[in-house]
Length: 309
Ligand code: CP
Image 1 (cartoon, rainbow, N blue to C red):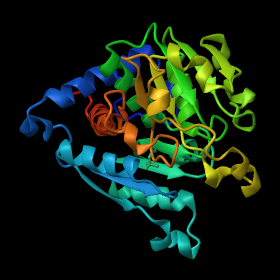
Image 2: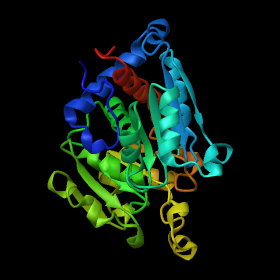
Image 3: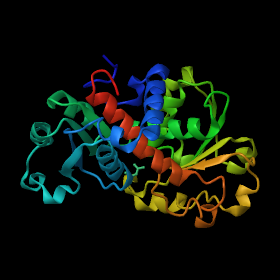
Image 4: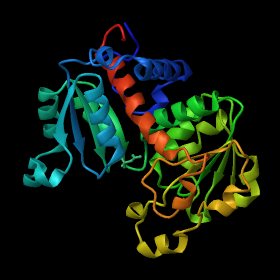
């Protein structure tokens, strides 16, 4: 039986290097399979999604992934059109969705929401973003992108730039990178530094340093991972205004980067990467979004098939 069969994906912390590599191999297989063979992977299966927060990429890439492996999707993309509006609890909503689906995908504003849902659901739960805490499938996609493009993860110097306090993709990515021999620079304005409680454990297995000055380190980086400042998570808009626009990757900064460095971003972006960078060879964020479909298809295939695919 494969390790992922009927398992929840709640936290990247549950995935060691071997499990990550299993997903990467499965992703390579999804990419290389003939489309007719690919559609056999989840034929007749249903993915149910519950998005209590907005999403473009995560929800649509799960839907696209499920379609590509022969399954179908149904769900709630906007809770204002669901019975949540009448006061139905998350627990009952999850119970109902697990009646109609073989695997569930949940995004919710509360930390711990996916773990809670997993206790209730009769079908596997995939965390598609919980509060400021975790976004494990984004981290899988990010690690796969690095590996696919740079042909390795070990030995790289990776800069993570922007909102390190509220960005949940950052926490999941750091946990994932903790499985590899990498050097990480965390670059943020002082008020958006990484939360020390969240990196307490990862400090033991990840070599990282912190700075507020991107230009101090930009010429050393193999990967520049840019994040959006998460306005919606600031308790006070005044505080957001103080840090808004702290870092902007433009063509001037690009000239200071290594020629073979890559720029990644989980998206959506606001102004932190100027659009003129999009057509440069270093810009990999749209390819990263494309890999999100393939990594999610691989994960669905592993969860839904006892012996893998
Ligand atoms: N990267 C990401 O989670 O994007 P969405 O919020 O659009 O799903």
